[in-house]
Length: 130
Image (cartoon, rainbow, N blue to C red; front, side, top):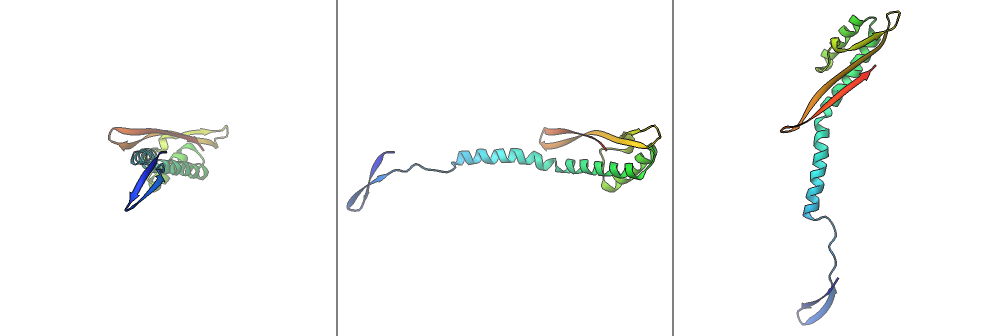
């Protein structure tokens, strides 16, 4: 930190040059690009995540409201139509029963593609057992 002689009118002052602080335009641009790179895929994948939770809710409803495999698939299809679920159908469900024929669990697995920008996209695999 050098000293500079500052002149103003008739007098001479000696001042210390202070170093600048804060973001430069380049570093601000980098920060904005990083935020956009993280936020854009997250925002574009929200509908897919909401559909996943709708699938789980519909499977719980179907399992609790029915007594056999066909009823589970039928109840799920009805609920899927109401909730606008397009990724899974009742016939895609993996339904397991115990020895007495009671529904033990209902599983599912599906993939969905989320377009980000141009040729860039995410392939998200959802699965679960209720």
